[in-house]
Length: 134
Image 1 (tube, rainbow, N blue to C red):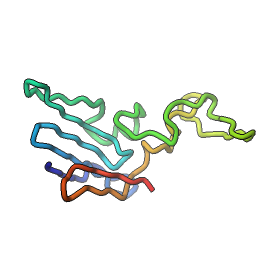
Image 2: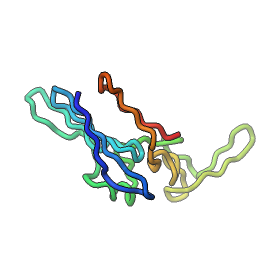
Image 3: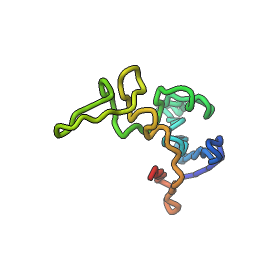
Image 4: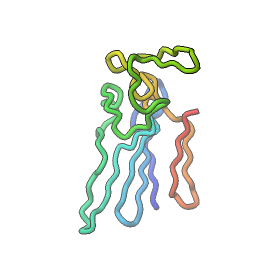
């Protein structure tokens, strides 16, 4: 397994990094520490033709201005909360609206907008990339 790292952009004076993991079978994964977004996944077919099977952008800036959630970790909520509010144990909670009148995938400050500053790569086998948002 081969691992590479490059500075992809800068956000609020912090580095946005792009990690690329490649195996000896022609598979390649690229992910950024911004929203833990998988930006590229190259997969060879049985004939050796390699295809990117992930929707996304080639540059960082579109991830800031568009919100299709391509390849991103979403949350705290996955899905749409109608009216951006819910009731739990008799208490009504109001959430931020980010899709018309609804709360979608964790809202405007969901996990897809978090810059992970604590990233760990398993240096012994190079088979694991972990990003922490807390």
